[in-house]
Length: 110
Image (cartoon, rainbow, N blue to C red; front, side, top):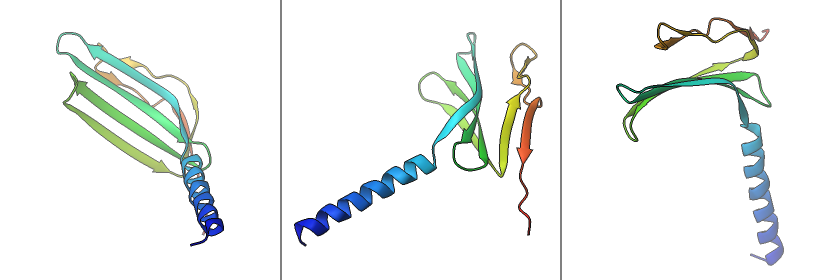
């Protein structure tokens, strides 16, 4: 391979990688975390939204110490979060109520 082809191939691979990272970039709209000092369990949630396409992701987790834990991630295609009205923790911080989120769902016509 000539030097010029190698440089062109390297630039194409770098541009594809940067495009993929930018296309999948997301930001956290709302998040919360609580710690139970008695049991040593940390639990929380986050709602993330993508910059360049209409989709959001809800993640719920709990962790005990450094290792054991549970992560659940739910993707909602065609949904965007317009605003957060309230995010109250319920019953001694044992649960979170996310029913006060204003979510827009886009249904494709077809």
